[in-house]
Length: 368
View 1: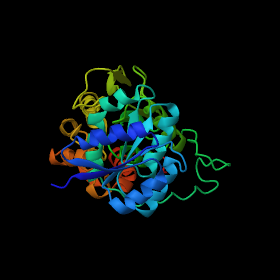
View 2 (view 1 turned 180 degrees about the vertical axis):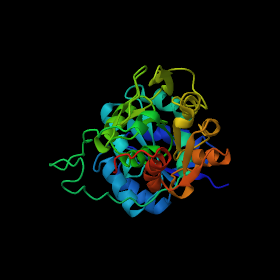
View 3 (view 1 turned 135 degrees about the vertical axis):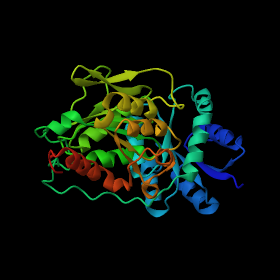
View 4 (view 1 turned 45 degrees about the vertical axis):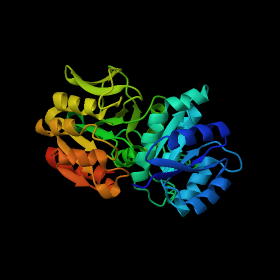
């Protein structure tokens, strides 16, 4: 079997050396080049034709995001970002995922040598996933027209408009979303289709601590519904989406007539914390037929078994189709488990959920 060919791009000679060492220790991959800046990387890509690139964000001569943007327009290929675990690093990483990076690794600010070596398994796992991922030529989204819902006069990110009056349906139903690799942008697309009086949405996206706060804030600025990190014990309200904080499980419980979020630091499930399995099992147990499950792009099988439990409890479930997934692992496993009623392209999932809720409840939601 041919080895996965990797080019490492980082301005630090030390980081380049450590990453090359980690990659070359793997029997199924090889570091074929290491570049100190995007200009050198460009020549290596032309000459070496790698399968995957690891890319630092902050580099001389050309910013990593600028290079990524050009790369995904002109020669799309799998990229794993290597970013610092800071608020600035989180924001830049989310932008990189928006531009088409497959995944990211958060490197420590101090103790870089030991820190990166401790991340060796994560780094090589993500390179393997990236090598199999589906990447597409990136085109920048058209600017939002002036006067469009939520558009800011200065052209900045649109703010969520005031919530519309909530219908009875919104207080009864709950939407549960599970996602991993490629899921940050897939979840964004689904949430942006949700009207302001949508049922509450609970989301488990595989993401490490330090990144989910920025991700929730970004979604909140783009969506009609309010988006935030979940807080243990808070009431789950219609018109809101709750994201599992990085490093914590998210589940749902009942408190009298209300639903409340449970955020816990129990052991990882399926090697993940947060785990989709934890969220979906709680959906089956607590919400039953009032639950709607959505499985988006991601590697592995986290949540597939629990999604079948949701279906058996009366939930309505949808999975993203293979053609629109970055990685088809999690949806494929859910489909194979018999957990899904529908398999749909990503662009159709949000509108389909709303139409399904309208048709089954007979109560109109605000149209998008």
